Image 1 (cartoon, one colour):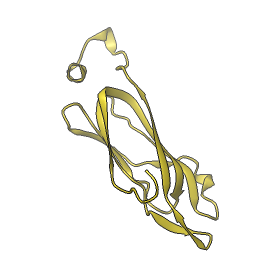
Image 2 (cartoon, one colour):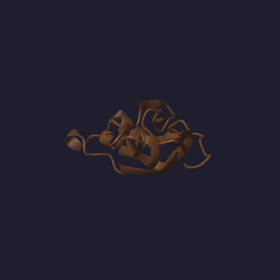
Image 3 (cartoon, helix red, strand yellow):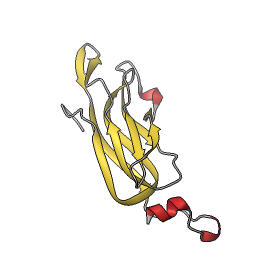
Image 4 (cartoon, one colour):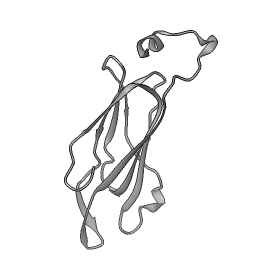
Length: 129
């Protein structure tokens, strides 16, 4: 996502994933909004809404621009898809000129469900198969 691309991004995983973290790298306006990350399970229900946070708040100096935002999703079950709304605004003041939001997204995840007690499948685990 960069330049003029400010539409939501849909991410669909080929199978459910776990322990998901989404990071944005680029230029983000500190007083602006940081967007959102919506997670959906295998049957399409929204299971979590995460608001990205500024990773290094002390980086928001005189220019009010930071370089990294992140979201850590807490949902313990499988995540099948994401809907990522971009940060904003797309243009913002930077030291007497106009800055533009830029972002490259990365995600970090666990592909298999973490072990559960006695390795018994639960309802969520059966749906994830």
